[in-house]
Image (spheres, rainbow, N blue to C red):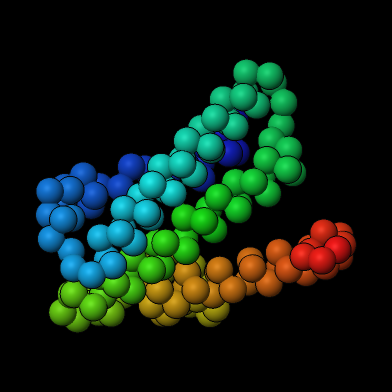
Length: 148
């Protein structure tokens, strides 16, 4: 089940080291960050559970399970994007800080990659747009959309 477990992120080190200060966030930032971590923990749990189930039964991860995990990841990214937006209002030079923190990851992609050099919030927004459009197309094709 390495194929599935390799996508499982490490526990967020920032939250553990700054947990006591999280209550100092103002406005809806606190709610957004807590919601992100709740969805993140649920997604991690689901990846582990599906990997354990598939490994225990000696079977491959099904397309339905992959689709479920993708939906759960999108549910994690939406409050994550909201949290980043709210926290950016409270941090000086937030865009520069975000760019610096993901710059090392950019080295993993070719310089002509469509997301190279884009801010983290923009990258997440593009992922959500693309996947939401794909979901709408799939729903329309299957006839399972609203009113179908």
